[in-house]
Amino acid sequence: MNLGLTPASRTRQVLSLAVLAMVLSLIALALLSCGRQPDLSAEDVREVTFTDLSSGKSWSASEAEVQAVVESYSNARDLSDDFGTTPPARIDVSLESGETLGISGGGETFQTVSIGEKQYNIESPELHRMLQDAAGLDYPP
Image (tube, rainbow, N blue to C red; front, side, top):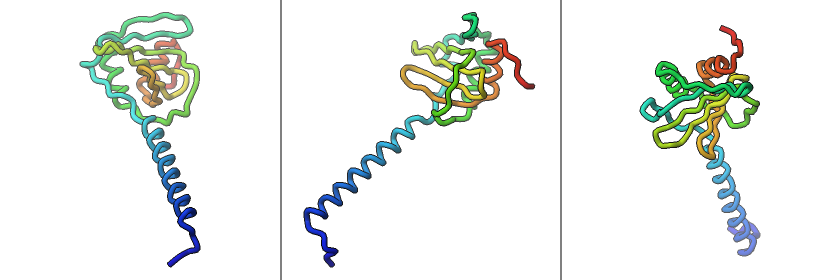
């Protein structure tokens, strides 16, 4: 059955569909790469530092605070990467690998995680409270 398509127009249709499939695949890959933040375990952590960004004051976390950061981070909910605000506080997690995992937040209920060139948004009520404490902000019970 010939639908009135010439071999040249059939070739253009096939190429158009191939290009469309490739573009959709690249978009899907890009969206999926924004996903889950890197895993974090207590064994990965060398040191945790809290910083109040408005005053510049920093201090090292206690062992209990390190454990709380690791647990809260691990239980955080993934968010899309379209959130944004200027955070009042930051938690820097120095890893045994030499990298630093940064957790910024405290103003809104979500946190921005950065490691190397990558950035992720997560939401953890516990990390929110820790960051608000670090910034000296009040929060609802």
